[in-house]
Length: 350
Length: 285
Image (cartoon, rainbow over all chains, first blue to last red; front, side):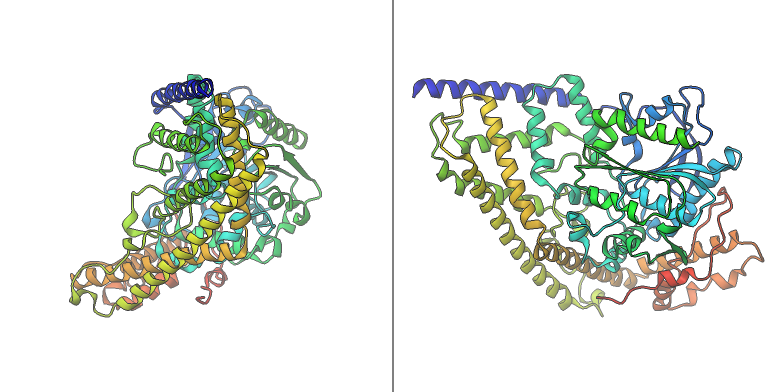
């Protein structure tokens, strides 16, 4: 009995020491930087800014690539650090990369709605990029919610987009495994509008609540007890910084997104209108590459791969990647596969 | 529980220290700190209690609806803020004339009821998680002698807890409850704002509704300036000072769909009149 107690006591002391060391490293990593590739500001509209990344190599693709990220998170996750950067891999492949940053909406922006975002902000970015590249249609990469905006824009402006890539983009919001959709199905969207902009913290809380113990406890315990070196801790903190750095959401746009997509599933039911113009996935004839994550707890794979059933394009490629939602942007496994597929697919289509 | 990174400054080590604390608490429950062989079946109750407490703590932090909760750490749930966060603004009887104070108390009561229902779900989830965990342990293992053994047990616990949680929160009754909590909290915030507007109006200060109406008019003016054709007369847009507040509010709703334009923006496609149809509000539920 005494030997067992001694062994347990020693194990506990070892565990305490591990945790103590990791906590010291975490303290040192607090000010870690995020976003690594140099970029220049090209244009802005209200809080939205269009950036162009400084090329890293000679251009090998004719058309520029415009990245349209989600409204609910910051786009720097695509360029977190040199070895975990989708943007950097695309630049290294000779693509001319532009990025839309939606910025920080203020209370005065509470009436900015999806039509504003799609026609004025995204549309303005598209027009600006095209103007800088001889007026040719561009390639568009929509990420998560930004993929939904990109689908809408492409359906409305067939002449502006040559090829469309969607990444972890929900299309069918009513698949059985979509927990987020189940929870917001009965939310009163009129009340959302009346209450004003929604703080990013609230959305963070919502996303964490999908798997609370895993996302708010287990990952920290794993880090604390794994004897991570300083670099591993910094990588972890970088990711955490992004996860909890969500911008507020404009009341009008969020209410419309919840109502039209999560509640009424309009993309699938083919009854969506933006600015009085019908938005139909059948109208999208452009080549389309749809990348989705098999272990995605925010946008289930079933919600993304449904796109293949509704798209009008005859050149559709669906591609499943064995990772989670955020893993699609930052995991080492997806780090090679995702940009590799995008580059080769675009390369084949010009 | 404090969700990491949601405070005013990002201090990861504090959140991780809290996670570590909880981990040690769990290890203590597993008998690690006692150094004796654990009666695993007897663990179900304390495990369930701990998990339930954590769920309750996490959901009690204020979401965006909680006007009084600004800057407070966010929890992970769609749950409502503590009922005490709401209530009529203490501004005296004159300032709340015309405001339905009973409605506020009615909503507060409803919120309390809903939180009670949510607590039942947490209790059920916690009990189910503990039962699953004990069931999966099988034959009683010996005392935890290494950190690896402890972590393995912890992983099993998380797996069982998430499984129990997922099973419950996917159910329609849970989804309905979450939505109703959010709707009731939002309705309370709307009531609070209405009371605050009454106070503001009594001092002759501009209200949210009036600011919204002006903002909408500005958007409409910008939109019209961006369109080809003659510029609008100033008098067409400058109606607010003479208009009643009700008209201003209606104006805000009417104009909520008007587009903004930026001087440096590339020419946008012209707005089509049919766009108004998409802005028609749905009837209130």
